[in-house]
Length: 291
Image 1 (cartoon, one colour):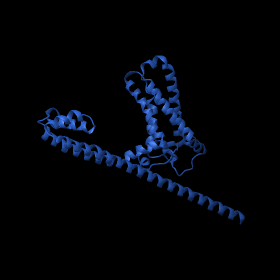
Image 2 (cartoon, rainbow, N blue to C red):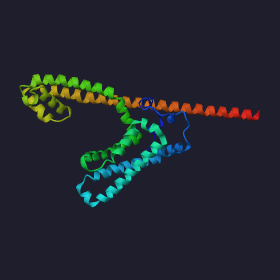
Image 3 (cartoon, rainbow, N blue to C red):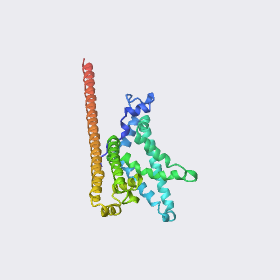
Image 4 (tube, helix red, strand yellow):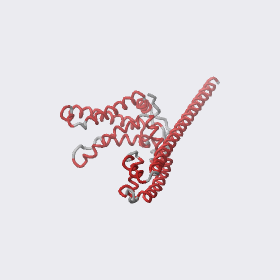
């Protein structure tokens, strides 16, 4: 598994504007040696893989706890294992806060991890019992730990404008068919297309691929052209819209990959410039010592 650089190492200008940094968080100041070593630990691939493994194990345990018989057979063991995993998650978050300081709180994924771990300490009794269900959110930490999943979520977020446009197109298509079906089939099947509400429900069922055997045959028995009419709706609303959604998502993934590539190139150029400056400073120092 390839591991990308963690999101905590980079500072987002938008996040900096929302979360002003104190003076001691100035990225231009040198990082203390102990903090640099700690960053190396939390960024190490084996450390990240260990956390991913614990998340998967914890997800399995949470699922096992839903079986009533497990509370009597291995409830104590499950409780101990869950407490150990929660302790490890807590230590991990503390280490990352110590390693990155204020920058930890400028990243949305880090705040999500902190929220998930904090919710796990909610008492299990009383009115807050329902909040214990939020423990299952630990599974979603995979989104912040696995770079490929994090990339997909980021692409979906950047594709929201395009997805919204596709959703608007779908609403327009559905409205046209809702009105048309109400006018054409309202007298034939009033329970399915008697009004706009019933027509909307029926067409939404067809959109999900459900109810074709219940909705279309009664219409076709009275109107032979009802089947191709409904088939046209199915083709437009399902295949065309689905393909547009896939196209928008793929474009967002490609754009994000290109942005990451450009960022990597810029970082490499910056490192090369730093190395050149160091070489120049070293050369000047040697010349002065020789003089």
